[in-house]
Image (cartoon, rainbow, N blue to C red; front, side, top):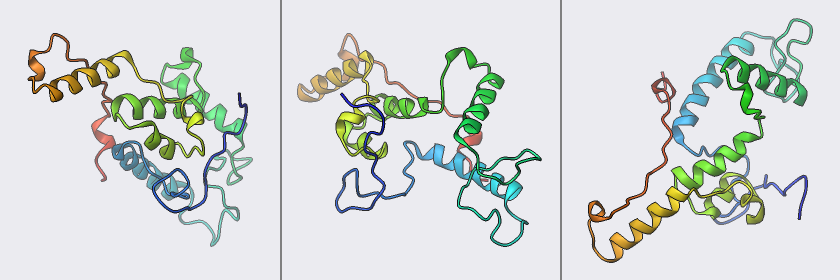
Length: 182
């Protein structure tokens, strides 16, 4: 049993494994990357462009925006407070989710929507050990049923429509404004 730091990978290695991707952002869904880029450009334009050269004089991207601490790096408690306010604004505070829940969402999404093998998910989550990925990677019953039906129909050349149960594909519907680059 392990607690705490799980051995994240941050350096470049060789081959297609969890250590070979360094600090490159690999999105679990490119549409999310498109939306992040759009938000990132707006954030940079609003808070960083037009400032003195080499401002904010530190390497942190996320900064305080309030008058007293403007430009100082955000602390972890500040990030959590921003998260809580956002969850409340969205009406999701009753879920009691924190920023770390996004890692669990990523594991679920990779397993059930993208149907990635656990090794691919290990790379995306930057885990040095597959045992760490197993905490986040959970298959739903529908995903397992769909995989069984798919295997049987392919192996026996049966049309999927002839199967009594085809299994449901889990999907994620993103807002249309997330996927346009403009």
